[in-house]
Length: 172
Image (cartoon, rainbow, N blue to C red; front, side):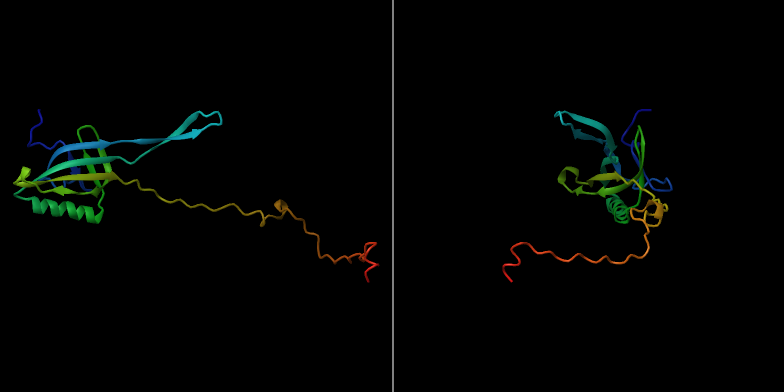
């Protein structure tokens, strides 16, 4: 099979795996898979990299909306954008889930007189579940680990009388 303009090479799917804005034609899909290396300077002036962080995936999707239904398709894209619905982008090589529409600019020019072009930007949403656990008891709650020992009630000790200096007797 050879790809033609009638075949979709990129599909955007809803949570139930139904294709959304199926009447739009994808003209280009640019997938961004990046990471960030963590660099740390040494005392010698050298730099080491000890780990990296993988950034969320991005997909820039160029679409053409035909004049027959560009209002309906644009409205569907706008609804998905406003709701922040998580989508799946299926390309020839991979499938990217938990994608949301980050940007949805469009152009209306005479170059495409019977439709409009859109450049959707989708970004992966990485969802985390917070985990809580009980903390160990503090040191204050455990007397054996405390810095002070219980000594009972203490009586104040009287302060010794002040002894004056040799000069203090001269100035009375």
